[in-house]
Length: 460
Ligand code: 4AD
Ligand code: MG
Image 1 (spheres, rainbow, N blue to C red):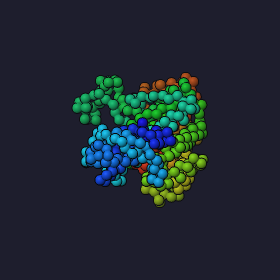
Image 2: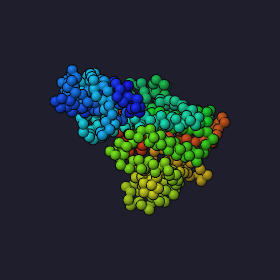
Image 3: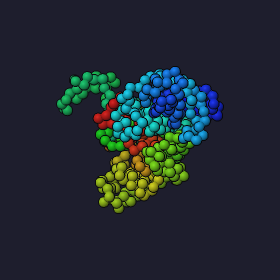
Image 4: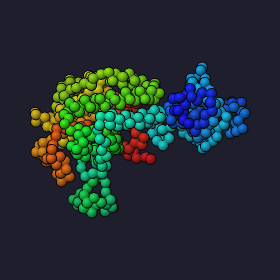
């Protein structure tokens, strides 16, 4: 039996015997009776347990510490005047595993920074119970969104020889003896001796492989971990993060944005509907505007602006920015947030970026200068989605690959897709941690993933 079952079907359990395993969140006793608050992890709310001196081990219970694992048996009785609708009058409380008195999670609010130092224990706190249940739920909702629409889920490889984004931010994978790797830059590492016979790395994106499935199944998506050795120590960059990447044949940039908007709205309403206790808690203790903001998003149409228009808007405010904007510069977080928070006040798609600041695979527009790209920016975070229509012309793609200096050998399969039944097609990548931040109001990516990996941090 679980606390979730009891809350969901309390009628069925009231005034009957119940049995629960859980952990003590708080305990206070007096001479003749005491209360302990029990969480079992299955539901956001706890259940209060009353234990009285008639229990044979009353003294032992009174000495139990916060964090101890116990098995409680008793009668579930209604408590109409109290904060919780019912409590358990214990007939027995058995210790399953004691908790040492130095248990770090005492009944007080701990800072998120402190909790990061104990990431093995933080899932036991209210905040992380809420964040990580919502994370789990959001993953389910995203699968459901795509599965309901007939998309095929493809598992793309984590080890690869390509660099999808062309940013050179890869973690290398090697079995070569690091002690024998030449320190001198002139002398080359002999990768023919390596496991795969050539240099390989952890993937930065599953897109290129997903495209092969789109040209076979039409609508496909990946949802897996990706890795970037970006040396940026910010609240929204992680070295290991999860990405959702749909890829659709016979879809243009407009179709791409429609799917992105529908998906975000779907996951927001799924979480608001299915995690009301968690959302109330986050709205009260983490981000007071959270629920209003998300409700607003559900009822608003996302904004649309081209990169060129966005630059015109931003240039007028250059004196407010650390990095000045002009046509051709990449937008920084401060610019993205200005657009979505000050100008549009809702999520906004920025489209048609200069080709020089975007990846090689994006479709060149008629103007020859911009590509059919879209970034979705949201208030509080900035970029949450990056996507594009893909270059489907063999010659143009090859030319672009040459310009950016890609080794054609590793991308032959990708060129082949343009040779055998090429279609116009599009896709995007949603950063899952940024999505979790958006859904929970959590402001640091380190608190949106169970075990964060960032520069100089790989604990647990
Ligand atoms: O814009 P990005 O680099 O796009 C791609 O990787 C494409 N291949 C996606 C596609 O079209 N299939 O990354 C997509 C999203 C970003 O918008 C951001 O939300 C997230 O991934 N992201 C990160 N999240 C956390 N930490 C990082 N270092 C991230 N880098 C990108
Ligand atoms: Mg991007």
